[in-house]
Length: 139
Length: 139
DNA sequence: ATATTAAATGCAACTATGTTGCAATACTAA
DNA sequence: TTAGTATTGCAACATAGTTGCATTTAATAT
Image 1 (cartoon, rainbow over the protein chains, first blue to last red):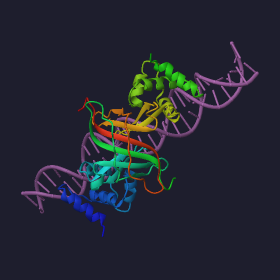
Image 2 (cartoon, rainbow over the protein chains, first blue to last red; image 1 turned 180 degrees about the horizontal axis):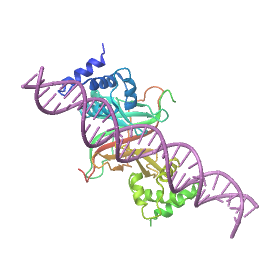
Image 3 (spheres, rainbow over the protein chains, first blue to last red; image 1 turned 90 degrees about the vertical axis):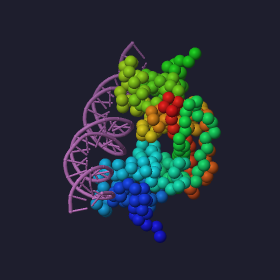
């Protein structure tokens, strides 16, 4: 059975860096969540436990991103949304963004295509597809 | 020969809304520019003439966007970038974003594909492709 | 041309997301 | 257990963008 807390701790321990309760809790929250969530949403989910400082949360998220446990997307609300990485989400990002509620959903099974060549000298490292529209609840 | 100022005025006049020097100047700047530029960059280009107020510039840009003279994209720097629309850019956006200098370039001739279906009940209104990497100068 | 009126502008103050420097604390290894 | 370094918390800051309201200006009617 699925225990995000334990899994998070295991993942962080295995990478050889410092294991802190903050990192575990935040990663656990993101593992349990099936979508990209904002700093603010994570803060709310941390509210019962001894709350992590706002700044620390930002730094933890940045760290998780650097270590590739997580990736981040910015939506039309100009706010970072974080989501736990799974093998499929790693280098191909497709996200759906609701134009009404600004909810961000990850579309893992996409196949982003880009036919035309880039301008001369340009190098592509990552491709991100953003589909905007209305989610089921707002449609 | 290409006169952005005149063309901008003509476009705004034809849409039947108020023609103001602010709107003309900003649209002219965006027409002359071949890429997506930030509020800040536009402000610099306005510096010789009697400068538009910061807030007004935001409102002019918002207005130009609503009237579809312009579209906006947010980059990884979480800043809005604006670009004049041409028929091709209208409903298909593809942008290249340099990971080093954060320059945003529009790739007009893309053909974004999205194979998988959206989750049930979701509606797509717009598709945006973001290719991240290094531009010619930073590569 | 002048007056009228609604829309656009300028100003000041504000909001929100995210950052930085530094002192205090906690994790790891010896 | 102790030492040393990485992480955390706090306060102050930076920046992009917004809001309310008084003033000005573009379009319209006289």
